[in-house]
Image (tube, rainbow, N blue to C red; front, side, top):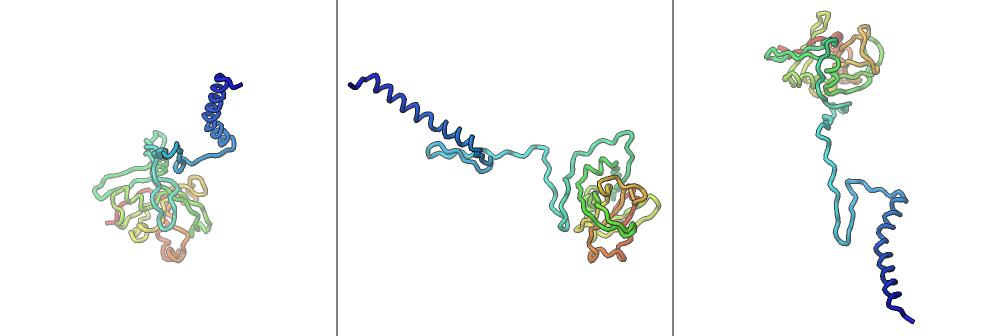
Length: 220
C-alpha cells in the first residue's frame, strides 16, 4: 500500500540527489586534475557565462624595452639604489648643460641591461659581456641620437657616432663571464660591440673598443 510519508521521503531523496550532482561533478573534475587558465576559463550557470576578471600587472612591474638590432634586453631599468659610502663612482655622464650624473656599479646595474658573447680584438678572446647599451646611457644624459665622446682613465678619448650606437647593441660592459671585469681584462668598464664582423670590422672599429671608461659626454 502506498504511504504518503514514503512518497514525500522519496521526493526529498530525489531532490537531494539532484542538488548534490554539481558538487560531485566538480569534485570529480578536481580529482581528475582538470585545471583552467584564468584568462580563458568560463564558469557557466544555466545560460549565463561568468568570465573571470584578468589579473592586473603589479604596480612595480617593468616592461622590457623592445629588442635593439635583434638583441633582447636582459632586464629593464630598476629603481636607482643610493650610493653606499664604500662604493666607488665608476662613471660620470655629462649633459650639454654641464649637469653630471654619477654611477656606481650597483647604479649601473639598475639601468637597462643586455648580455651577449663577442670576441675582444685586443684580448684575442671571447667573453660573455653584460652591460648598458650606449643608447640608454645617452638617453639618460639627454643626448640620445647625437654623437658621443668616451673618455678613459688613461687619457684616451674617442668619438662614437650616433649611427653606430643608436640602432646597434654597443654596450658599456661591467661584467664579463658573470663577474666584474678586472683591470687586466680592460675593466672595470669597457665598450664592446656585437659579434658582427661585417657591421663592426675590427680594423675599422678598433678605436671604439674603449677600456677603463670613466666618462661619457655628448660630442661637441
